[in-house]
Structures are given as structure tokens and as C-alpha cells.
Length: 395
Image (cartoon, rainbow, N blue to C red):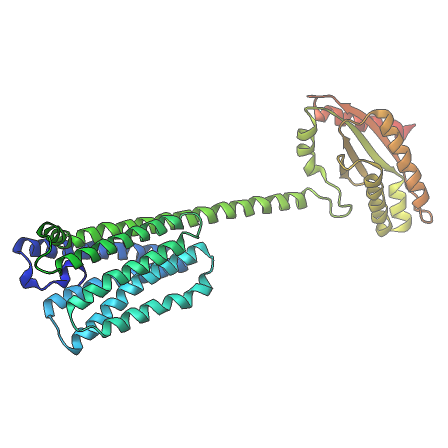
């Protein structure tokens, strides 16, 4: 009912009529394939935008079905008005649902725009119901669809990513509707019009469904590109969130729940970070900790561990790794810290803990130091610091 189909059949040359019938058959098969493809895709992915696109292709298939129905039935009067309204409404629904799906894809302004997209469907259907002839329908439908697709294309250009491919395809489809309108005007021109242009317009309209088929496949391909970009973006976002969750989980697992210091699980990463440039290892052990637990209870012992951890944080640098090695043993990995400066920090720690003691639960500790040379073995440096700590405890 669009393009060449708007001319009386008696005016069509035989070959052009056969070509039009053949092209409509090809377009019908093509539209059915596209509709089934998007229906299967929607069943697999369950996305709102795909539901809109499935509805769009069903609407386009309905419009083509109305065209075939007309040429097999040739209604007139009130029946023609009903068919005309159905055709115009179905074509408008095709464009509107394509736009709506793309807006849902971009997730920008979809809710605010949806009410305005219902208007064209109602307006197209009402205007079709007022028409009384096929020529009037052809004169109205192509420019109206050109305007709808042009507005939709420019609206979608504001979206980012793959939706712009669909915007470009819709603008191209608007151009084809415009060319069809021009061809229709030429075929309806006065007898004195240039025969060459009229003949060219007849040829274009006879193969119009072939052109429509190509444009529809282009729209389908652009929709798939937009969907692929959306899925890829969501996968990248999910991957970032997964990595962030893994990092948060690793920090939780590597953190001692009592003192909020790192635990032994964090040591491999700490050593990997400081090994190239080396570091100073300080191994701490609380003196008489078992006696504190026995005399004052485990709650007092836990409080002593928290106080000691707080003292480490106050006396060492933010870049130093503070680790609860196990039980009442603590390890400080201090990159770039000289032993003399380390002694000053240890003295400050003793002074701080001495003034914070409450009752008999006073904290004293032994400490051993050992350097981790650049590129050296962390395990060997850790053993050396442990030995130095036991030597200090024995002394």
C-alpha cells in the first residue's frame, strides 16, 4: 500500500506488476525471519528493549500483511477506512517501538519520553481512518513515516555507544521514505511531466519492496550492534564490580578481626611489593602475655592486643605494613627505614605503652630486627628477625 502499490493496478505494466509482487513476497519472507530472530533473542535474554523491538517487527509484519490483504480483497468505503487506519497505525507502531527500545537501551529519558511516543500511533491511525482512496493513503503514509523516522533518528543520536548505529539506520530509512514520496509524486504528475523521470519513478516503485527489505535488514543489524554494545558494557561493568568485590573480600580475609591489622595471609603481597627495594623487618613478641590472660582473663588479653596494635599504628609510618603474625606476635615491614630510626620508634612505643597501662595489665615486649636486602629472600629475613627477637627476649 506504500509507494508503487498506491497506483491503480490497471496502470502498471505487466513486468513491473510481476516485479512488485515478487519483491513483496521477498519482503514478507525477510520480515518473518527478522521477527522470529528477535523473538528468539528476547526469549533468551529477557530484556525490556528486546520486547519493544519484537513488538516493532510484529507491527511491521502486520502492516505488510494488511497490504497483501488489500490487494487480494480490494475493499472500499468503511472497510477501506478500517484497513487504512490499521496500516497507518501498524507502521507508526513499528517506528515508535524501535525508538522506545533504543531509548531503553540507552536508559536516558526513557520514562519521560514514553508518553510522547504513544501519540504518533494514535495520530497515524486516526489520519488513516479519514482517508477514502489508496492514492490519498500513499500520499500521506510515506512523508509521515519519513518525518517519524527522521525525528527518531535525531533523538537517538543523543544516546551513546551502539545506539548511534540504529540512529544512523533510522535516518537512512527516513531518506528512503522521502525518495519514495518523491517517486510517488512523479508517478501521479500531470501527463505533460518528463517521461524519463516518470519512468524512473515507476521502476523505483516496482522494486520498492526490495529496497525496503534491504533497509529493514540494516535496521535489524543496527539493533543487534546496539544490543551487543549494551551487553558488552554490562559485562565490563559486572567485571569491574566483581574485581572490586574480590578486592574487598581479600582485604577482609587478609585483615585480623581483633586488631584490624593485616594477618599472615597478607604477607606474600607485602613481600612482593617491598622485595625489589628491600625493607627492615621488626618482629615483636609481647612479654608475659600468658600471665595477663591467666590473671585478668582473655578479655583483658584481647584489650592488650588491641592497645599494642594501636601503639604500632601511632609509632610507625602509614606506609609500613603492620601485621599480627599470630597470637601475641606482631611483624612490621618498613621499607626504607634505617635501624637507628627504627630504634627511636621502638623507644617511643615502649614509652607510650608504659603510660597507657591500667592496673597490673601492663604491656612489655621484645623485638628483633633484620634487613630484607633488595631482591633478597623474605623467608630468610623473617627467620633472622625471629631469632633476633628470641635473643632479645632471652637477654
